[in-house]
Amino acid sequence: QVQLQESGGGTVQAGGSLRLSCAASGFTYSTYCMGWFRQAPGKKREGITGIDSDGTTTVADSVKGRFTISQDKAKNTLYLQMNSLKPEDTAMYYCAAAPGPGLLLGNTLWCDYKFWGQGTQVTVSH
Image 1 (cartoon, rainbow, N blue to C red):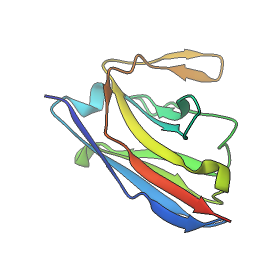
Image 2: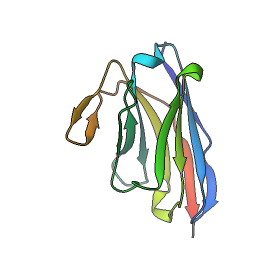
Image 3: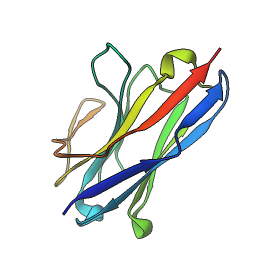
Image 4: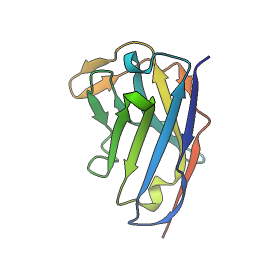
């Protein structure tokens, strides 16, 4: 049974940093494509960054230069380092897992995400 558990969310002032973690279990983590998404109230879910099993990454323009995805395969854990946070980053953040490798088209990694965590709330105050 695939399980994804996010942690590390909270409230931070603008300009601050947070690191989110996603503990994965129930599947062979090293063969999966993993990603982070977010959804703010009244808005569509937004894919913000992903990482393939070979380390290939993709980052949305909205967070480029501020957010960094990484993973520790030995711990089956995905991370999202968020720096220079802005109020518009306020959202529920979700990690997701896709069986098998992703597809790199241009500079964008596409993964067929099948599994989702419950989310962790990030609130950035002015």
